[in-house]
Amino acid sequence: MRVIMKFGGRAVATGEKIKTVAHLIKRFKEEGVGEKGKEKEEKNEIVVVTSAISTVTDTLLDNANRVAKEGNTEKAKEFVDELFKMHELTASEAIDDKNELEKVKEELRERLAEMEKALIGICLLGELTPRSLDYIGSFGERLAAPILAGSFQSAGMEAVHLTGGEAGLITNEDYGNAQLTLNAEREIKARIMPLLENKIPVVTGFIGETKKGTITTFGRGGSDYTATIIGTAIDADEIWLWKETEGIMSADPKIIKNARKIPYISYIEAMELSYFGASVLHPRAIEPVMKKEIPIRVKNVFNPEDEGTLIGKEAEQTKKAAKAITLIENISIINIAGTGVRSISDVAARVFSVLAANNVDIIMISQGSSEMALSLVIDSAQLERAVEAIQSINAGGTVIRDFTFNSNVCAMGVVGAGMAGTPGVAGKAFSALGKEGISMIMISQGSSEFNISFVVKKEDAYRAAQAIHDVFEMGTGA
Ligand code: ASP
Ligand code: MG
Picture 1: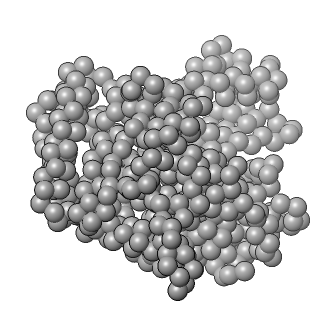
Picture 2 (picture 1 turned 60 degrees about the vertical axis):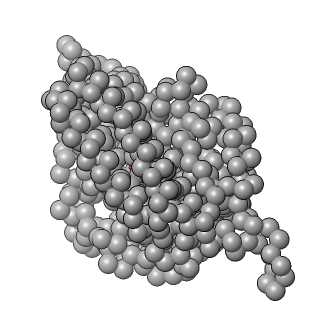
Picture 3 (picture 1 turned 90 degrees about the vertical axis):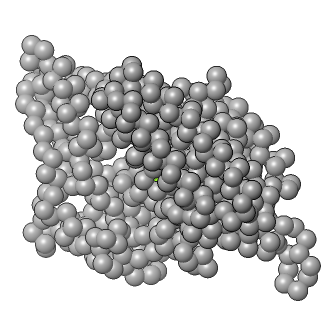
């Protein structure tokens, strides 16, 4: 069996945890496939994809921003030292073999020397471009991969670590959200397949490289995407995403007490969930596997025997119309009323293009048919940028009559393939909210009918989520 195994940041957060990963891989590698009782013929082939050690990516990006602002080269050096010490400690816990450990430490030192140069450059220029942000952000994975490979070696396996670029993930120059080039799949196959015969490739998640050799990233949480891309390129039998959670849940268990693990979910449903705030999967991770129908499993590193969640092609036949609910908390709603001088499509065209030009991502859109008004939901972190952008198209006041925004709101997405073509789903959801005395500020339904999303006041959000979760019995099986 050929399997991609991706480990999230929290699964590799300490040296001990990395050792757990090494044991898990070793066991799986040696299990092989073959019928019970007969000699095992075929060994499992494994590609490992790793995230940065938990919180490292955030720290890198924060510090890049800070040094660009403050221009203090001493502070930049201090930060690099801290990062070295932290990874050195992790490595010494994860790697018993002394020679292997020394080799890995040397690699960490070399990589960090590169990063220090770049950070000092950023300090002196006082400027942080998307390109340098990707470069600095890539070091989390580039420090983690040698440690994992070293730990595997130390546990008696043959392992080799590769950056995304070395593994063939060649991208365009769309920094922060890089797209693979058309040849990438072929390239990945050519570079990974020969290694599988006798080695375990350990590939950095999250990062790619342009043809010219500049580092790019796939956006936060992008290691899932790396795993599914590699899996697709080398025709893996399965892709296992190891996390520190049970699997994909019916709701966030921190908010909904009786949230349960969903044993099976279709590609489309998982995609809807990841686009709508469920942080279990990178939004682009499902897309690559759909054509080849490669199953994905979301599994818990600390309970490896558990089946986790299986993601596959077919939508399950169940009586349950809606399977899961997600909540996006830090959002703002923007209401724009046109002046009536221009058509609503003209107003919408102007608004959307100026928002796109300013990199504002729109989470939801709705427009009432009788009104010259448009409502949009965006991430609150982008609100200031969005407001300025919208104001900029209203010189002379001929486009927009009235324009308000509200950040005291939450968006919710209800997802389930059973919703398509089932009458009364929206009614059921809305009357559940009505019973709780919660009113909806905005509603939108995708044409796939696999999701309904709506906005409520922040103070109502958790109660609303619980009411929906209850009315669709999301907390129980079948
Ligand atoms: N390390 C990256 C992040 O924190 C990518 C990932 O974890 O998947 O976003
Ligand atoms: Mg992560």
